[in-house]
Image: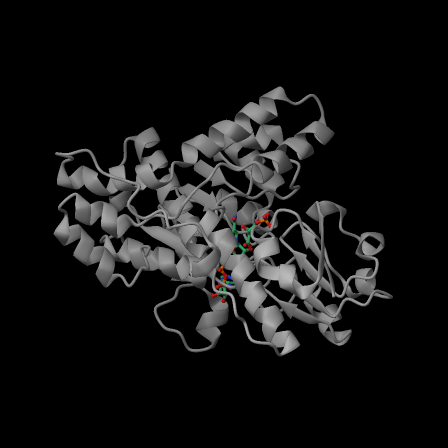
Length: 383
Ligand SMILES: NC(=O)C1=CN([C@@H]2O[C@H](COP(=O)(O)OP(=O)(O)OC[C@H]3O[C@@H](n4cnc5c(N)ncnc54)[C@H](O)[C@@H]3O)[C@@H](O)[C@H]2O)C=CC1
Ligand SMILES: O=C(O)C(=O)[C@H](O)COP(=O)(O)O
C-alpha cells in the first residue's frame, strides 16, 4: 500500500509505517501528479481534495487529521465512492485555551474584568460547547447560537442577531459552509459587524471567510472601540497587513495547535483507516505519544485565589506569544510570497505546546472551590 501524507502530520511512521510505503509532502504541494500510485491520502487543512484531483489515481481513502473539512469536496468524494474520515473534536481543547487566553488579554488591554461580560458563542459543537461549559462553570453569562441544533429541538439557543445585540464578547466556532440551510460564509457581514455593541470583543478561530474580512477592516477603521482577535484569515496563508494592524490579536491559524490535539488527530485517522481496511487497530495513542504535559505547571506559592485561574491560564498558553511571532513575520517580509511562506513556516515550526491540566494547576494551588466548579463543568481539563 502506498500512503501519501502531509509532512506536518505527527507520528506518521509510528501509526502508518506498518501499512506500507509512506511519501511525505508539503500539504500545499499535494496534487494529482504528486499522488502517483497512492492508495491512501492523509491531509491536514491546507490540501484541497476533490474527486477530480483523485480521478485516475488508486486513492480510495482520504483522511484529514483536522476537525474542519471545508477543504474536502465531501459530496463529490462520496459520489466517487471514496471513503473520507476526519478527526472530530481532536484539538477542541486547544481552541478553548486560545479563546480563554484572548479573553484574559482583552481584559488586561481594556482594564475590564472578562468574567463580567456576556459571551456570545456562535456554533455550539465540540469547541463552542466546551467553551460554554467552562465559562458557565466560572459563572460567566453566555448566549448560544446554533440554528442547525435549534432545528433539531435543542433549547436555550438564540438567533444570531439577538446574540449580537446582547453580547459583550463574540466567539465564532462554526464550520465554513457556503450552501445548505445555514451557510456560514460571511456570516458576520458588513451589516452585522456595524451592529456590534460598543466595546465588543470579537474572536474568530473557526475559518477566515466566516467574517467578511474587507468589511471588518473597514469597520475597525471607524471603530477603535472594538477589540478583535483573528486566528484565521479570509486569504490564508496571506494575511492582509492592514487588517492585522487593526486587530488587537493576530495569529497564524494555530488556535488548536497543541501537540496533544495534533496527535489525537493522527490517532483518530489511524483508527478510521483500520476500520476501512477491516483490520484491528493495534496501536493506541497512549503508547506512542510523549508523556502528557500534566504536572509541568505550578502556580507561585501564595498566589491570591482570585488570581489563581488567570495565572494558571497564562502559564498553560499565552496567545500574546503567537501574536508577537506573526507581527514580527509581517514586519520582516518584503512581498506577498514571502508573507505566505512566513505564515506556513510559523505553523510548521510551531513551538511545543501542551494542553493544560487546569484542574491540577488550580488544585495544586489549594483552590478546591475553583477546582470543584471546573470539574462540575464537565470540561475535560486534562489527564
Ligand atoms: N483555528 C483552529 O486552529 C481550528 C479551527 N477549527 C474550526 O472550528 C470549527 C468548529 O469546530 P467544532 O466545534 O469542533 O465543530 P462541530 O462540528 O463540533 O461544531 C460546529 C457547530 O456549528 C454549528 N453551526 C453550523 N452552521 C451554523 C450557523 N450558520 N450558525 C451557527 N452555528 C452553526 C453546528 O450545528 C455545530 O453545532 C471547525 O469546523 C473548524 O473549521 C477547528 C479546530 C481548530
Ligand atoms: O482542526 C482544524 O480544523 C484546524 O483548523 C487545524 O488546527 C488546522 O491545522 P493545519 O491543517 O493547518 O495544520
